[in-house]
Image 1 (cartoon, rainbow, N blue to C red):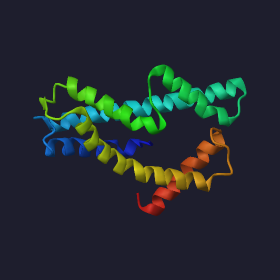
Image 2 (image 1 turned 180 degrees about the vertical axis):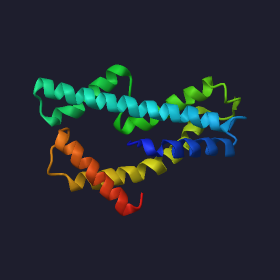
Image 3 (image 1 turned 135 degrees about the vertical axis):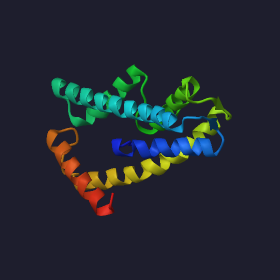
Image 4 (image 1 turned 120 degrees about the horizontal axis):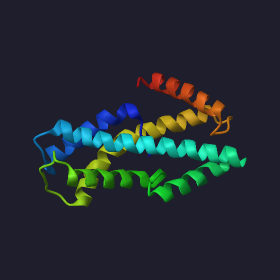
Length: 169
């Protein structure tokens, strides 16, 4: 799952709205609940970036090929109890449910965890599928470069901007 910082507010707002509209949660402060959701999503992005940089640094220090990068990142994530890849959605939803349970802004929760996850998954999937398509298209444009290098990072950012501009995003 790929989350982009620019989409966090939109995703948080939709999750909050969905849970309130479906009478899954009760709150007098939907804006505050949205901020709680944003905090979880921003922390996920921050930790993911930190792991990415650490894995790149370790590959460089050890003189390893890029093919080792994801393996190292997965090991680092596992050591921290953090999820990446296909497991990221469930990890984020578990974090969000934990926040709802402890938030002073959520007065009542009327659904089981699996029902809350189903509702949140719909919103997350809708917003991450398009991002995954954009990511695939961007990677296809720069497939001649080795991922994890400085050149790749620069060209990825340029190609991503082009793809988003072309799609009107």
